[in-house]
Amino acid sequence: MRPLGAFAFVLLALGLGFGWTARRRWGPLRGVRPWLLALGLAPAHALAVGVAGAVIGVDRGPLIAFAGATLALVVAAAVTVAWLLRDRPRWSSLIPPAHAVAQGMATGLLGGPFAAVGADAPTAGSPAVVAIAVVVAAAWWVWLPGRGGRAARAARTRSGRLRS
Image (cartoon, rainbow, N blue to C red; front, top):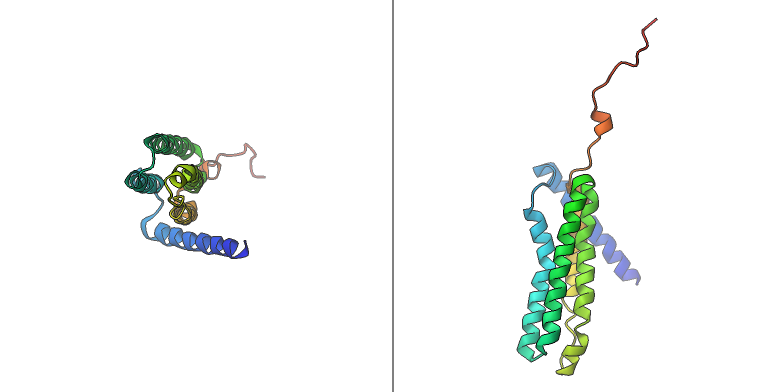
């Protein structure tokens, strides 16, 4: 467990470094394209797992259920990101790792159907997807714009007291 924790800290430090460098170079992260890339990583892995399952002869039922679960997870992640970007943009950076972990759990459920045809469970890519999502989350924590200091940037008004 200790090496895994140390590796997680290395991934977090790597992501924070990337985010800091990108924010200094290009300013705060804005737009939809980065989210498409981050949320598209787990479905790309799911597509690879689905194709591998179809090639080795896994029943179509579990693969279709897996595709439906993947689609539901992507939609849920996108809706959550859209909701969080309105008021708390930095908290939305936690969605890619949460989405990747949920996708990894859904992939783990394919162990039985894969074992039925004599193949190993498709778990090799899930840790890589989660590791990439942790780096993305750490980078975006720094790179995303904050809520903005509305109170700090508000126009200063007089308190009504006169100088004596």
